[in-house]
Image 1 (tube, rainbow, N blue to C red):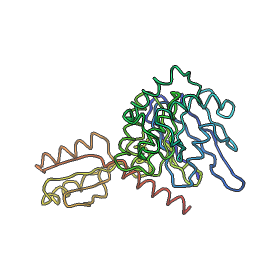
Image 2 (image 1 turned 90 degrees about the vertical axis):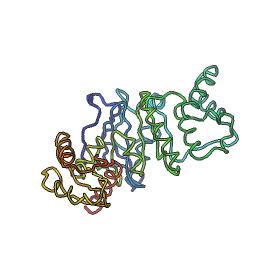
Image 3 (image 1 turned 180 degrees about the vertical axis):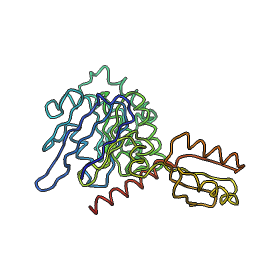
Length: 330
C-alpha cells in the first residue's frame, strides 16, 4: 500500500520539526509499524488516527525515545532520537494512555515530585507548579489528594505533569478516552492554548470528531501502515471527493424550490435532504463559486437560515471509514 502525503497547513515546510523516516517496529512475528514516513511541522496540532492496534501508541513511544525502532530514523531538528535519547526526552512531554498516579499525594506534591525527577531546582518548583495548576485550571485542587479528583481532572493533572519541564513537544496518547463531553471540550480548549504557547502537539485518538475539531494536520494509520497524512481539510477533500455544504432553510415548503435552483449548478453534486429543512451537497468549486451560489439563493428570496461547509468531524469520520474499509479489502 502506497500512502498519500498531502501538504501541511504550515507554509514553511522546508524545516519540519519532526521527520519520521521509514520507521518499522516488529515484535518477533508481529509488525507493529511498517515503513512509516511523516513530516510534522512546528506549531501544529497533529493527530494520529487509527483503530486499536494500528500502531499509534508504538509510534508515540518511539518519538518519546522510550522504544527503539527495528529500522528507520526519527529526527527532531538535527538530532536523531536513538542517538540522543536523553536530549530528546528533555524536549518531549509524554502523556501515556494509561498513566500512573500516586493517590496518597496532593496535586501539588505530585507535580513537585516530577519536577524533582526532571532535575528542576527546588527553589523554582513551587512557582512552576503554581503556573501549571493555573494553566490546567486545577488551582482550587492544589491541596486535594489525587485519588479524590475526577477522571477529567486527573487527565489535566497528568498533562501538567508532562509539561513540568517545559517541553517543546507534547505527545498525548488517547487523552480524551473515558472523558465526559464537558471534560473533552475543556481538554480541546487546553490543547489549543498549548499550541498558542508555541508547543507542537501530537495527539492520538480513535475519536475522530475530537481530532477533526482540534487538529491542523492528521495521519491515518491502519495495521501499522500509513494510509495518508496531511492537512485535515486536504485529506478530506482528497479522499472524500471534495467539500460538502449544508444549506438550512427557515421554511420546509421552500426546500423543493431551492433544489430546483441548485440542481443545475455545475459545482454541486449529490443533492440530498436528510432533514425537512436541510439540503446537503458535495461541492467541487472554489470559494468564489460558493459565494455565488449563496448570492443566487438570496436573490431568489429563499429564507436561508445557514449556509456553510459541513463540519469536519462528520466528513473525517466518513473518510476514515471508507478508506479503512477499502484497505482491509485490498
